[in-house]
Length: 144
View 1 (cartoon, rainbow, N blue to C red):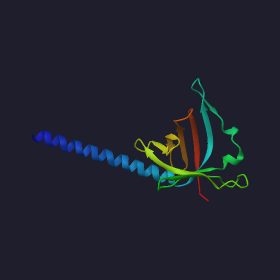
View 2 (view 1 turned 45 degrees about the vertical axis):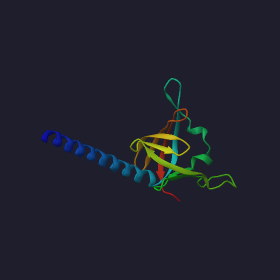
View 3 (view 1 turned 120 degrees about the vertical axis):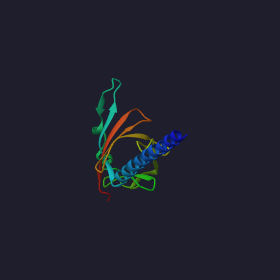
View 4 (view 1 turned 120 degrees about the horizontal axis):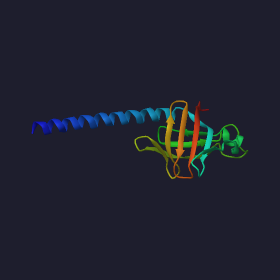
């Protein structure tokens, strides 16, 4: 009976430690993700042979300065940046987001599901999962 109780207590300690590590990682990711707006540096599309093709040059200067901004309150937006068509709204998109799968993915509510490949204070690389495979590398910049 004592060994069963010891095993149960050990299991609780292990599970509690694991949950604390997951929670700490989620907090770190939240801090990095919401620290800055994100500019797109590179967009790659997966070819049928499994290789990746850089399609960044297909995007215009008007799109290149757009910022993807994640807020710590669960809201996100795409800010048009300094270059935009006259009359266009400064905020091109706004919505909600959440982490999924232990903060390994970002879900835009009603939109893209993105697997986080790399995230730190200056770089966010995601794989967009719910459309033809795209890899997007973004760089953190100061918000205006």
